[in-house]
Image (cartoon, rainbow, N blue to C red; front, side, top):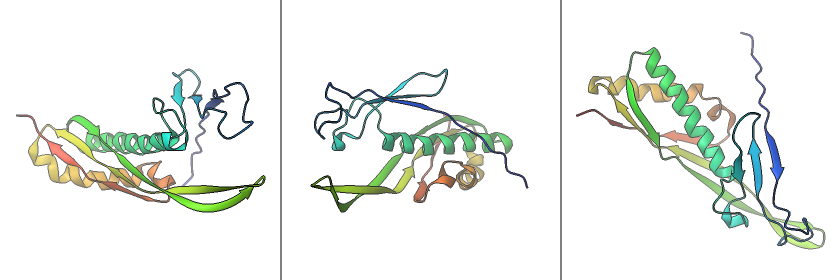
Length: 168
């Protein structure tokens, strides 16, 4: 089987120079603008726990959102292929990142660095047209997970805990 290589280009611009650049750790903002050509800008920052702006998206949230949306897109595709009508889909995904305390000496000062995601849990609530589709619809989550490009690119557990609703 031949592989098809896809390329994705993004643009990132640091917007956090408050006048002194990175003269000290406390003198700059962690803000940035991220976009892909022809698409709206996403204002980002680091997590507020790391001196970021809480009103902006952080990379950790974007990783969880990428997993959630990739899974949804594959799931909807598979449901359509299997004749299952999905009327609604929403997900309140959660991610857990473990901060490691590697002590590093840099430029004369000690700093704790490092961390990694240990788990993301997808909690999709799917509204199906027919109750009798729930068993097959549940099984398609496993297949969607296997197909998800983003889930196949991470080295931590991604769990899927679906809930189903039906029209009255």
